[in-house]
Image 1 (cartoon, one colour):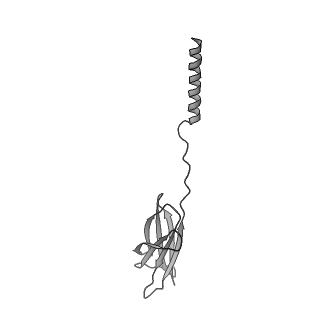
Image 2 (cartoon, helix red, strand yellow):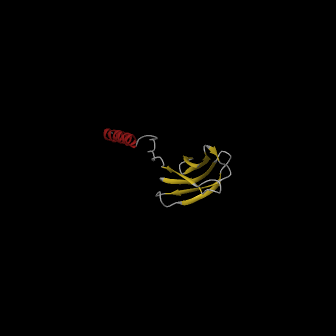
Image 3 (cartoon, one colour):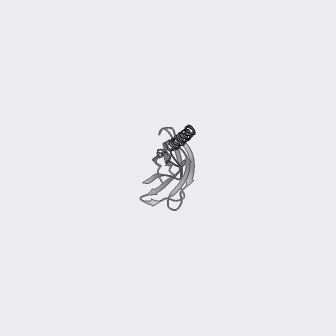
Length: 126
């Protein structure tokens, strides 16, 4: 029995690495072509590309996405092995709020009001 597994890992903010592993009875199958697909709805699939598995039975492609994306890795079979496929899902991390930097605006306004108040008091004493 032939088995395909799919794994998705984020490389950076917009690029993911999709790795397919092809085995039979836990033995890697090298030299076999597997196809990589993506879908945003889980039902309409578009081909990313095809790769030949290495001696470890693995092949990988990258894909750029900024939203939840479904991936399918598919082996179409050959005269010796039956077809097999697997899916994986990538969901990007939620954007994080930027960390506060510098001086808060309320503090700047407070200092400005204090300075203006001192100047006003100084002008009135003259």
